[in-house]
Every structure is written in structure tokens, then in C-alpha cells.
Length: 239
Image 1: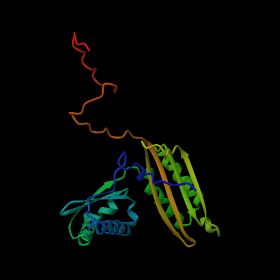
Image 2 (image 1 turned 180 degrees about the vertical axis):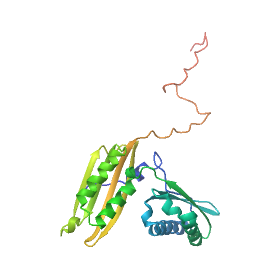
Image 3 (image 1 turned 30 degrees about the vertical axis):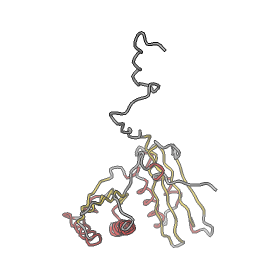
Image 4 (image 1 turned 120 degrees about the vertical axis):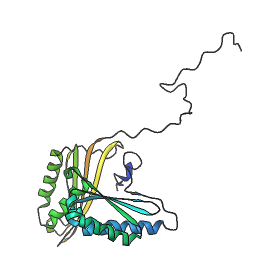
């Protein structure tokens, strides 16, 4: 049986970064993690139609910063900023700290894996044919500049008795290449026949990893390319 690795977790620390940036001790780590999950769940439930892709959370000693990546910032902000202010107050009551909410607009939602998976799930809930939903999602992503797209659905497709898995792919999706910028997203479609899982992979091209910091007083080996040559031995030096 093949072993699967999460495409984003596989690249953490290289070309990908974490969506939660804070430190917790052994005593309060589980409480902070549970609080993060409740924050994300509450935002997604309240702003279900806002096309939210990712929610980043940063913590300091007295403040929590929540960054919402969405394709519809107007839905999140509301008229005159009423919705975002209400959201900030709710999160303040949940965390007990001052909360800062940042809104980041996604300019190309067609190449965002999370939004692709959410779109397919919503279409399946509206009884759209899964083959049509998969094919249209792949075509829109490729037209928007993606170098490769793969989408997959699994469950009782079309109301069949036996669950199965169907997928559609176009272009390259090199999952084993660490420098490949792979976006991964998944969603769940709740239909009358049961739940159907939706996954999406988007390949955006290769990204060079950031250069490693080298200490200024570090000595280079003579054999390494670009290293300065060793000084010549003084004349008359013998054995």
C-alpha cells in the first residue's frame, strides 16, 4: 500500500511556511492549539460564502493577529467594515486578548487549490455532474496560468452503491520535487448519498529555496569552488 505525504508539510521550512506562528510551553500548548482550531472553525462557519482559502494566526504576549486570505474581501469586511469589526469582537471574547484582523485578497482564485476544492464541493452539493465539475475546474486553472493541475473526488459519486475515486489531471504535478511550488487543498461535499471528499493539487512552477545564512567569520575549505587559494609557502622552507 502506497504511503502518502502531505504536499505542504513535505515542504515546510523550505519553500513553504507555517500557518500558525507562535510558541507554546508544554502546559498551555494544547489550549492554544484548541483555540486556533475554534478560531478557524468559527470564521469558516460565519463566512462560508466568502471564498476563504487560508487563515494565518500569529500570537504575541498580549495580541493575536489573524490574517484571512480570501477571494471576496468585500464579503468579509462588510458595509463600512461592520462585519470585520463584529468578527474582531467575537475573536476577542474567544481568546481574551486584543485581536487584530488582516484581510488579504487572492487575485487569482482559479489557481488556489483550496478554493478549487471548495468550488467542486459546492457544485457536487448542487447535484452538478462530477465529471463536468472536474473538467471545468482543470480548464479554468490552466487558462489562469497554472503549469499543472490535478483534482480528485472520492465517495458515492452519482449516487452509486459502491464508492469509487475519479480524478482529472492536466500538465505536470511533480510531487517529489521539493523546489516545486505545489498548492494542496481539500474540501468535503455533504450530499444526500453521503460525504464526498474533494482534493486539488496546483503546480505553479519551481521556487529557489532561500539561501542559508553563513557566519562572516566562517572559514572556507580550499577544495570548495570559489574559495580563495591557500597562500604560497615561504621560500627556503624545507622539511
